[in-house]
Image 1 (cartoon, rainbow, N blue to C red):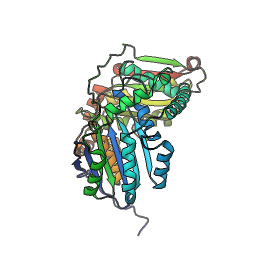
Image 2 (tube, rainbow, N blue to C red):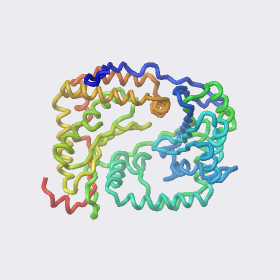
Image 3 (cartoon, rainbow, N blue to C red):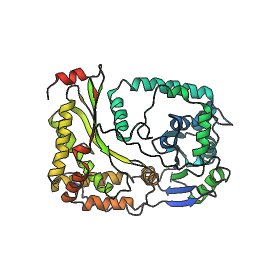
Image 4 (cartoon, rainbow, N blue to C red):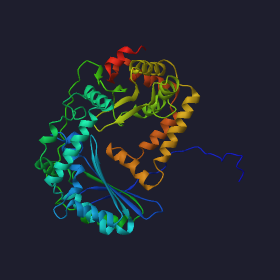
Length: 434
């Protein structure tokens, strides 16, 4: 091997056929199977339409998900933890605005021993009151700490500004919510949203597909797993006020947290793929325009980026940073300068080619191994999209032109559409000159 020569590189032609095998349990729960990899490890992800969108009381959705493994009708929390440790397995639960997840990783040879425990935790939690109180007390202390951080203040205000306080995506937690939650709330929510009507299963790793489908059917496929009724009631959006500029005072803050952005749309919108490319150029990676200007040139921050977020019922664009106290106004001025450039001047061919390479490389990483592959598939299932979505994304990245990007910027990056939040020490902000 001649180390003085760089290895040959090839063009990325796209993910190819990434469609998982799909089976259905007796009760119609879909199982998406990614059978691949050389290591004898299996990952099982259970996904439920049970995120904050569906709750009728604050904290219910996240709390149900968080303490599923604290006790069942047959086992207490310590026994569950010991069984998971004994088989060298890993269990994780988390929830977001739309969905709730339970994820198990274990050696393939232990699947018969550990899979029944996963079903027990999922289907028959006991929500012991002692563990609930401990969890809520710990969560409350974390909440009190978070309320002192400018990043949290800015994030909450930004969501409230976009969606309004009565909307599930905009509603913020209040201190009294921690004392209003009961075990009855948890049982009711669990019965309504953790059942075959809302469940989807993804299995990845090294295993026998037919045998795995049979095991899952025995544990999750029964028609008795339909207690409660899944509510698909559409929640109306409350229009936010006309105000779009917000300053939050935090006297002890040593930095100012910024949020600039707007409500957009989710992955179903035909402009979403192009906006992914535009967002990458704006602030989607370390070499983006926002980083080059506000970090490298101006020195206002250690980091700044933009995010394009797709939700089941909406979506938004947000630019996020924490800057030195007193540089908030100057940083926001530069943010709008970069938005203005994208609207008024086409992206150079060189910058677009660099962005193409970065995005295609990131996409390739999304299918590097069965677990990454299953994560990419899960993202599509969350949005009810087909597996050819990544092919469409690949084609968009390769074919989009500077003119296309400028047109998108003109449609969606207007300053008049942007909401702006700055959280920091107001006195210092006023002292510092731009």
